[in-house]
Image 1 (cartoon, rainbow over the protein chains, first blue to last red):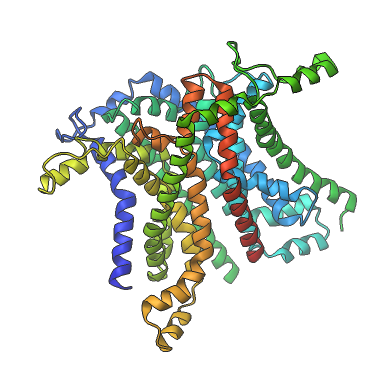
Image 2 (cartoon, helix red, strand yellow; image 1 turned 90 degrees about the horizontal axis):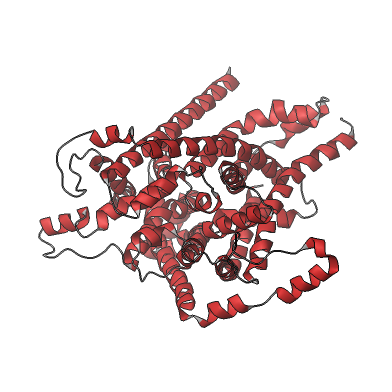
Length: 264
Length: 304
């Protein structure tokens, strides 16, 4: 590695991580002034536990994320199978477009259009409308993740199972699913964190009693930087980081076990 | 072999369920948006003129068609504020995408030149910020860029500045925010493209007497181009309609179209103007989105 490569990596990662590191450090600041260091303290974390509205919003967010990411994983995996396995069925171009477009579509457009749909069909806005919006948005991400695993998949395994008389459903459960499982799990995790994090879709499609955590954070953040929000953010970042690291370690272990199993 | 009839039915379900879901939750809503952009606001709940009145039969259809007008489009195009915000959105997104390429390329290149055993860790480090909250990462910059923020303190402390700079609430802050938030989207496709670069090609170029700059332009760059295009589209398209970044880091004069849509909807409660802005934003993005679609399809075929 040349000096140039090392420098660009060091600077690049410093740029990516320094802002988050500063936010975490200042969440332990005793002073209410965000730019003055007043000594180490965990008082903002303690105050969070008294903030009923925030806790309520966090609970709504977790529930939405659990339900929506699970449904999105099922739908997204089906969409990936349809795209990779079924060749050129009628309407495939439109289908592929509908899967890829939401990945880059500005969220304000998705949010507005889903809200207008819910109003047009007379659905009461609240927990379920936010969940439906998140399923629709995140299933496309799941589809892309699972699809990238499916294209590198050795199809002769499926064909062998079919030749031995397994039904397509049985083949899927005992051959395809175990092989693509890491991608399905990664897709679920991605859908879960996208749902946890979403502000725009939730703001458009929510109703009374279904305020999510990002919406609460946003309404306070607009008024300026506060140590409480730094504390919430730190907990949020820590939780997501732990989940992602644990998941990738688990996947790595499974991968190593599989490889060793194959060798013996 | 299983009964071909059940096979076909099973395949039908696997395609139809996600297909119908996407049609119901993406295609139909866009048609409703287009419809509402052609209707008038009314002081009611919901605040726009009703959709097609089915109970009135053919008469309802006639009323529906005669009720359509381009008033909202005329209004939006006559107000220079909207035109300005379209131009500014495209300009800010384009400039940010260019900066993302300049910042992202050396990082992706450095990653592919790192020892093989480090690469999974480096890849993980690029992906991790993408998993953590977007909103929080934008918020982190508010504390750094504000007048009494950490950046100004550091610059004054180091004796570089005498007076704090106003960085927050400017377009520069918005561009910085976009570059920061979208960096993984630029680095990952670039890394994937550069990872396929065969070292021996560069050696061959060097053996034939090409200086490093020349072999970069003749070998590395053309190979990286698909990744560069994918990354640029992945950043540019959502950046044009970005709401959170201009709202938190931009000033009152940062007119970006996503923010205008949000204001029309939530503050002015004008649903039909918001829908009109959405339709016009989609029209601006149709060409880049079609290219993106094409790139995606081709990369899938190449791997498949």
